[in-house]
Image (cartoon, rainbow, N blue to C red):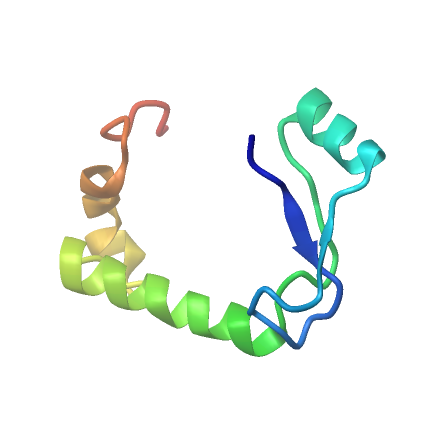
Length: 87
């Protein structure tokens, strides 16, 4: 059995300061399929993740986030459903 945890502070990304989710949070996740946990990541961690996503999209799929009209169609290659559900 795995333990679901969340950070008690936004300044750490290590295992220090991790707290188990409350029963209410787990119930919300099980009911809704999503759980919003405020301040789980620091602004720097979010920024770094965004940079990583931009880099991956560009390097692996040829998607330029500044030219989605011209390159956005390549996102279908990154999709696990090959673009199914895209309008």
